[in-house]
Structure formats: structure tokens, C-alpha cells
View 1 (cartoon, rainbow, N blue to C red):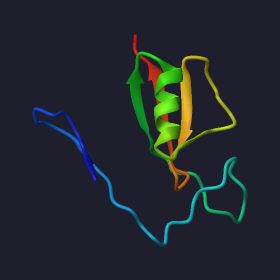
View 2 (tube, rainbow, N blue to C red):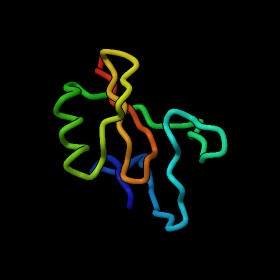
View 3 (cartoon, one colour):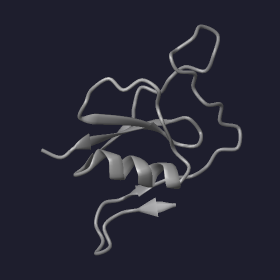
View 4 (cartoon, helix red, strand yellow):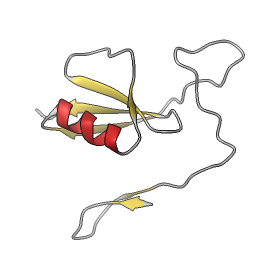
Length: 86
């Protein structure tokens, strides 16, 4: 799957991995560790972005570290964040 601007330019490509083991949050010794990289996506409305992500299969992480950020987990457990556009 690829996402990007409709008029061309830079984008992101994704592929699934059947052998993927979701990370455990919070990190637990002996379990799959969290990734050191994630996407930050600027949005105008955190609630609308969260609703759209949930409709596509994501879940909102139980721990939210900042009021202007929403941490979301894709169906495989990888984190990404919505951040209010400033």
C-alpha cells in the first residue's frame, strides 16, 4: 500500500509481514521490544483523526503522554502519533 499526495511527490509505502510479533507496551523484559521509530502526523482535529484511525483498524494507546498528541497503534501494534497542527 502506498499513500501520498494525489498530485504526485513524496509518499510512504507499506507492506505486511505475516511473521511480525507486536511489541509489548510498556516494554517488558523477554518480550518483543518497542520500535525506536514512529510516524508523527500533523492534524487539525485529534478526535476526528483518532476516529478515522479506529475505523481503519487502529486502537488508541492507553497511555497518552501529552494533551496535544494522540498515540495510536496500527493493527500490528506499531505506534504512530497524531499531533495538533500549530
